[in-house]
Length: 154
Image 1 (cartoon, rainbow, N blue to C red):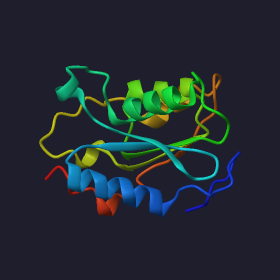
Image 2: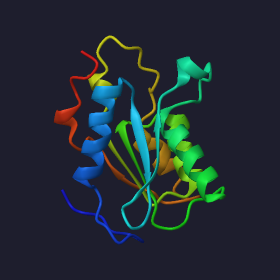
Image 3: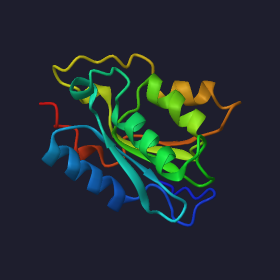
Image 4: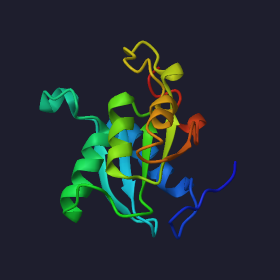
């Protein structure tokens, strides 16, 4: 796998960041995402809170993006920011990734390993990012460290 380095001082994908999120998912029983700044620091984390919040948009990625933007007091993230997620971003989250201005996204698991859980993501993250390239070209790293998380839904 090639390391990617756009407007960032670190190379993506980062095993340390993804392993931390995968550990969070296994121990806290929720999909996790994180917003990473250009220096490789975790600016915010989010977990899926759809049921707890009675909010169909409260996905891990959306919660992490909301938290980062609120913390930084911005509606578009600075250059060099990346989003990491333990699961493939759905179309809603992929669109938010474009609008938030991310340089790239890295995810681990994908709907093929969803088990008996309902899979609402019939449109691939890559398809949404490709469709939005005229707004913002976003790098994508798929199935990163998938072997460490693919059995989560079993």
